Amino acid sequence: MLTDIEITGSVDRQRVRSALREGFFLVRHTVPESLLDDAYALLTEFFELPADQKAQCVVPGSNGQSGYTPPGVETAEKATVPDWKELFHWGAELPAGHPLLTRYPARYPPPLLPEQLVPGMAAPLKELHASMVQFQQQVMAAITEAVGARPGYFAEMLQDGPVVNRASWYPPMDQAPSPGQVWAVEHQDFDLITALPRATAGGLEVLRENGEWMPVDAPDGYAVINVGMVLDRLTNGLARAAVHRVVASTGQTGGRLSIVQFCHPAPWTVLTPLRPLGTDEVPRYPTLTADDLFQRTMFRINRLEASAGEVR
Image 1 (tube, rainbow, N blue to C red):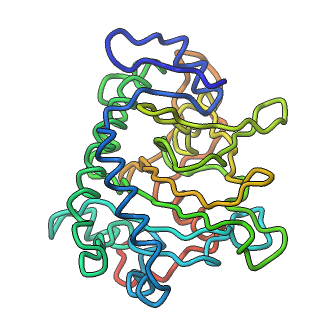
Image 2: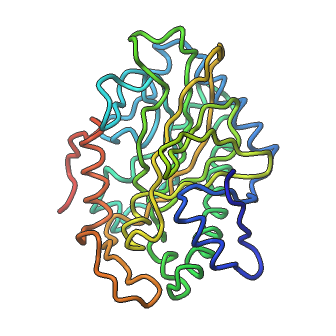
């Protein structure tokens, strides 16, 4: 059973630190349930479109961080075949001339919200993105206090960061083109935290420290929070980037649609490990930038694209 933590009022530091070591925990979210319902309805309509229409929504040069990704593209680092899923990503735009946009254009691709294919899609998805950003900032504020960092430590990293939402459609497994394919092979996320509100079906599992896989579901009104590699590195291993996967259960005949949000720091952030809670523990990880970690991960999952014009 996942730990349930409070992010309002006084923070129970020990309980939050324990949840961070587990890598997955529950938080009551602040996103309107009706907004989630609207988003799921619109995204269902999008994924039901013919393949040639969805293909119009691929955004070249975005490393799959904007628009549509067809099935058979994303392959996990430890996998030999692609995951059996389709993806749709969206985020917020930076103003023209912003130094992050100038320096890292591939990290800030323009959001593509195809109103011509799904009328009324743009406004609810933009609102959902903004609402989830606000929620994730509240979670990170509680984590900041729990790990003993100064107020605003993580908030500055997140200022104008390339936070992105992902909708994942996992088609029924009896339609998978290759034997041995699963919805999403075991992996770790490469952000600070990922917020996962309720999905339309089960399938998410987390690998416990005893080697067993535990099914994870977010009840209505809650989000599962998943620790990513960035937070693992910054806390010098105090927070654990847990391994997780998405698999259909035996006899499960339908598909699964989920909406998550990846909480990325600004790409120029230098990921220097903290000395956890005043100890003299030596750093577990070398220092690198958030963009270096992003580029390395994209290469390992076969998603790194040429990014013309990117300044180094």
